[in-house]
Image (tube, rainbow, N blue to C red):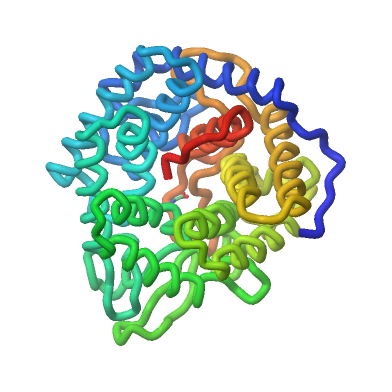
Amino acid sequence: MKFTSSLPALTDAAAAAALDAAARQVRINLPLYTDRCQNHSSVHGIYPACDNNQWTCGFWPGEIWLSYERTGDEAFRASAETLVRSFADRIDRKIEVDHHDMGFLYSPSCVAAYKLTGSELGRDAAIKAADQLISRFQEKGQFIQAWGAMGAPENYRYIIDCLLNLPLLYWASEVTGDAKYADIAHRHITTCLANSFRPDGSTYHTFFMNPDGTPGHGATCQGYRDDSFWARGQAWGVYGSVLSYRYTRNPEYLGTFRKALDFYLTRLPEDLVPYWDMIFTSGNEEPRDSSSAAIVACGLLEAAKYVDAAEAQGYTHLARQMLGSLVEHYAVREQRPGAGQIAHGTYSKKSPYNTCTPEGVDECTSWGDYFYMEALTRLTKDWALYW
Ligand code: GLY
């Protein structure tokens, strides 16, 4: 990594204070989102409540578990356990689980419950979610199909985001002793690394495979253009590759992390928070995606565990600079019911070239809030991952 920034690094004391503030906001929000879930993104700064049927519903219980770890307050645990029951019901009744986001849903909710409290309900629900995830594996092409009816030509593709769903599979193999989950994770990431990362380390959001299993082509859904650099996809690539390294120790994944990170760093504005697509650089009026900065900070802090001291110091310092920028300029100051943690996230912005439904532009996002708290937690203790 050849990158320098003169931004101040977040101190331990400032990280602890920011995490305490975040936990206070979570406490304010408990009455709103215990019997219901939190919407994927805020609307004018306030999250609507929603049913447990979005791909994003796992992040809010993740915030509650992080708050429980920080404070030891049983009120957090009680709310999180209510949500775990909802997640168990969701997978039992197969409510909106015909997609690949089982890790995003079940790692910060149910795996966290199992790891923190020994919850058998959480464990069983998460294993059922892992079974659901591997049911989407396509032998022809060796990938986990992201969306839509299995095998449908318009949906015969996987997406870079799936790297964050793979830890659920590694975990499921560890707890069940059945290698089939990790085996599918290995086969999927092999396909992903072969196709989704361009030679310069940038990434395609989605990648189509041909019906005969040969690679098709990269395309965007939420990025600006097929050949641009959707910021969050790049962030999923950075953090996702190091998470797979954590479980497999395959050096190729650490190499992918370095390459994806190096590209990401070439496209950052001065405050280290990317525009929603990194085709846009400094001086642009386009919205940012603060969630990408929080995700990358988590990746840096995780990678620091596996590299030599000098490299680790560089990653940790950079993560502290990114988080310092988030705490100083993006953290929501006015705490009130329904408010989030970090502003200026972008879920899906419509461009003339992409296929997404516009929503959550320049708003808080539930995963941005979660990864912000995860990164701060990582600075306050030797954190045992939910992933
Ligand atoms: N996984 C979808 C997104 O990052 O918006």
